[in-house]
Length: 200
Image 1 (tube, rainbow, N blue to C red):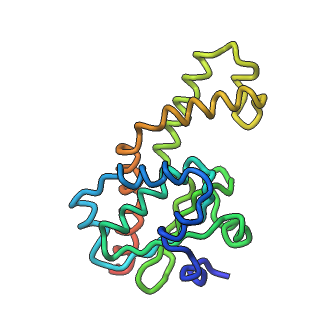
Image 2 (cartoon, one colour; image 1 turned 120 degrees about the horizontal axis):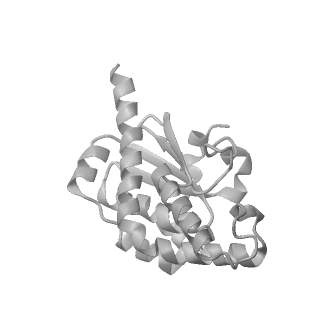
């Protein structure tokens, strides 16, 4: 089963918002704080672009990055967004994995006007991941007193992992504008590559 076949089963952003049980206010605030430039409208408009998002409302990356795409849909008439809950579509979303092999959310699947899949973005732009990793390393060095702090996050004791995640959650609050640029640049690369392939 192809993801394209499920696009129209997805929720519009308004419906997804109505079904959110966690992070709804934060999600709305991030939509409002997402800047869309005239250059974004020009590069990403002009031709239909459909974006299917697999997500869950508890996910911090989803709360940060899905609103960016929601704002794009508001600002660029050629863009249409639909959302599916990941946990209800594990068989479908499992084919889309991060570079290190994880199945992560949010997962964004991009289609052209003919519903041909033209690209996928899993979790977040790579440069944002690099920044998070660098900040986590800085936090680890600054807090040697935390048990197991030098382990990978998934192997840390629960208390230490909670401290790292709480710090990261607070640290990333003011990154919305810069990370929006990373996100839109990544989407633009996907769109432009598809257009060039079609012309070639």
